[in-house]
Image (cartoon, rainbow, N blue to C red; front, side):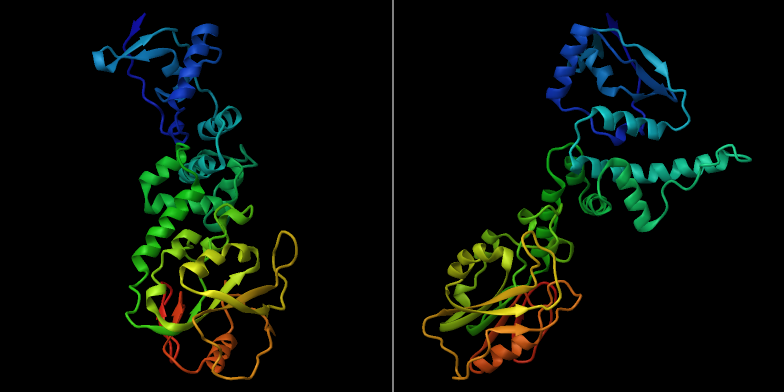
Amino acid sequence: MQIQTTYEFHPIADIFPMMTKEELSDLTFDIEEHGLLEPIVLYEGKILDGRNRFLACGRTLLEEGQGYTMRVEPEFVEYEGTNPLQYVVSMNLKRRHLTESQKAAIAVEAKPMFAEEARRRQATSTGGAHPQLKELIPEGVQARDQVGALFGVSGRYVDAAEYVQDRDPERFAAVKAGEITLTKAVRELKKQELQKKVPEFPNGKYRVLYADPPWQYSSKGPDYYGPAERHYPTMTIAELCLLDVRERLTDNAVLFLWVPSPLLDECWPVIKAWGFEYKASFVWDKVKHNYGHYNSVRHEFLLVCTRGSCLPDVKELEDSVVSLERTSEHSEKPEYFRGLIDRLYPEGPRLELFARKQSDGWESYGNEL
């Protein structure tokens, strides 16, 4: 049976992505074999629920200018409820196999719709007809958390999806379609921002280097897109290895490298790529307890690595364990350690990598200055 159709998809329905070609093909064969088990729901003259079922009922022949050739005649019913948005969300979350990335992206698109629906229902309610009615989606963090809860994702994950939507709508659409994960999208955007901000390396040659790299934590725990990545763009081991550090060194040089305990096993390629060999370490006891999978990780390593012969300029030995209470600023290191380096190596030009501020006697390289 040949049917020309003018049905459009309702904007509420479009907050959910369409099925993939493979999924739609499977649905088509199922409907051809078993018939249409659920009717297609119309609202305001458009398809509110059943977009994929509608397409699966037929074959698209647009290249022949024939519209839809219907293999199975679709059945339509009118939506009779009072909250079409909540209906669409409920129906799709029940039967769609959506990733958390997709749910977060959908939540971002649904948030203003929920707010509008709340205002509409408030405007039309009278005399206690809806005693349970209240603002469904308020402003700020509460809005983020509430809409996240509706879709079964954290408010922070909703924030991440909104971050992608604001900066790259095309990439956001790929997240919503399930083509890339939200974690990957955020990481790629952070990397782009990092590349735009990071200045060129200074042209000098340096004897003393001090580095606090933006190590990437994303693969180390359950957090959706890495705790560090909420604060600054992180870099992979491969990206750190590619930095042109080796060409900026004197023949004899020393590197003081901050490495968090969970990443200790991953730092060695970076040390080698930059032209250094590991020699010793300091341990910063942060005093305050911190999160960890196996213990309370309240310490961090400051590795001492050298190129050529670069023993300290002074013979006095510093204590290898330093107890200083950490601040609330993410990844901030005490100034004590810069002073320690200056005491051990008072001679020679010095460069701080990934610096957050300019320091007397040091040249700085970083994107947080």
